[in-house]
Image (tube, rainbow, N blue to C red; front, side):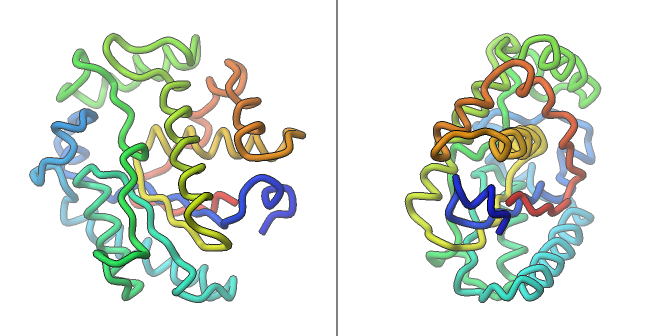
Length: 226
């Protein structure tokens, strides 16, 4: 583990954006919990293949790091596309999905873009990202700001840190939240605070939060976090 990172987290983390989903295929924004959990918005066939490949790559990286499978935890968003992805990865790793090593965490859910954007075209994402760059504390109407999402992601990581010790954590979530999570971890490693909460709080400034798009992930893309 990165010695700097170990000062503020006790586990090792990877992030995985869900595989290509049916909303991705249709070019639809599906960001509300109500819609996100519907089975018709799970993975497309290509997305299942992406999730299998990501699981194989994760397994390879675990072996290279000499991490035993009993130390792996899969933490995932409740949306159908992320649950589907996590389930496929668990199958690749031969972990029981209904067992203690797989955990749904609601605060890892997709960023809610608001009713104006829900079920609209993917083309509208750029409007939100332009707003994020101007003011990451500004909410799209009825939706979540960057800082809103970062706040609940910090809560999610704090709960993971409290529950698991010295584990390999795979966070299976969505594009915007995972961009933001990478962004704040990258910044937190450079801070001088004593613990996770203090360092993350230092990252919650406009100059940092507005930069999350630099950490964009493709569907099915796996990355080490720390």
